[in-house]
Length: 139
Image (tube, rainbow, N blue to C red; front, side, top):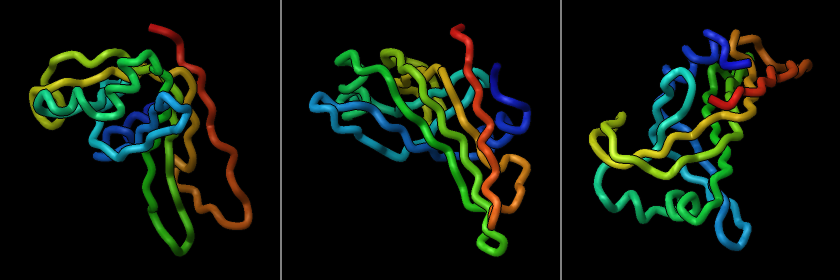
């Protein structure tokens, strides 16, 4: 399985994700950041050599490549409509490339499993809708 056309459109419409990596002591580290989605994988990183010293890249460089990524937004409070896509995946070592925020160092995050909620904008109230779960094939 892969992302649906609706999920891809949503991912491409959002400028910000939250990415969690795992620190040496087992403590998850969560950071908001700009991301790109190329239709199959996510790219996270930034401009300048300093991005290589960030905690997320140090964690990945230490071999802790399993990551979680969340893209979400709040459509409405009345009725309450929240949308989200959560991804569990694996990050590669950063490479030099031109990304969303310019030339720099970016790590590719390959999705393994994802869940999405309310991509059609259904209101959530007394009934919570089951998330769509997808297992993504290794490329």
